Length: 359
Image (cartoon, rainbow, N blue to C red; front, side, top):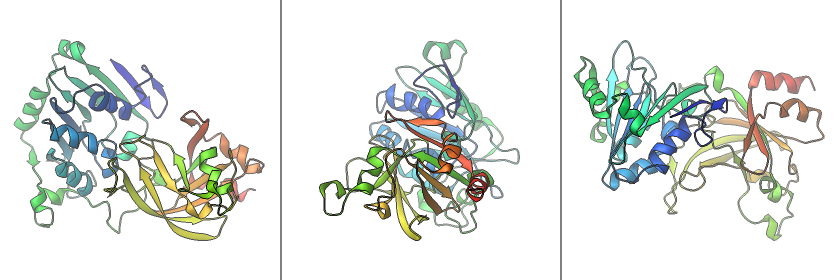
């Protein structure tokens, strides 16, 4: 059994620090691909909630396994998105939408297999925030301990289906049919009227490593100048970026990307930047920052402040170590990344801009 409150609040096992890590344990590390059935029950869902697992689920189904999904749906509330349902259907999942006035609010995930079952009960939805920066509690129980409490995935799904609820079964064949009742229960993550919630208007504070700044310091024409200039970000950036719906089909390792508008405050220019999630490599986020190449604006251990202003609009500032702002912002970088002593964290935009204005 394992328990955790994320992000980085409390955990009883070093490999299960939150919902995402528990799902990795159940669906990736502790199973044979194609053995049994994955389960997802969640009241809310969006594309970035599943981006860590789409390729895992796809491979599992291609090898003979199944994935059964129950999500909340509504014609009046933003519960689950068209984008996440489309992707789940594309990779072969059995997707069901529950529409009722008292919404589906349960969140549980797991696995039924020949090697034993696993159940994760969580407050975290199948969304980017639910997987990363929301404060969520998760409890995992598996194997013999799960048998002791008498839990059965088969019995649970059967009980759900016996309820007098409206349960819809969307299909890809009807995705463009605006009169289809199932697709009418889903919201569009790309709709023009989508606006950031207050808790999404934040600034990421992140210290920079040598690999982040090597090409920034390099002279043009040298070997050090070659290669892609990017910042290596936290693995838990799922809710800081728009839907990562652009797949990389060129390589054999799957990545998912989004194109954002980045205003480089120190340079006074705005450019398109690509943010990429390395789904099948290191599960890292990388932010393309080509405009900074050879500018010498940043050294190792300097800080980047990346402010999200809109669904696709961001600002980037470099904060030097000798700046008065550096120490005032560093204490917001409460989380650590990897083994290079990189740190990151978030601060509300209102607080961040107040600090800027006071200097």
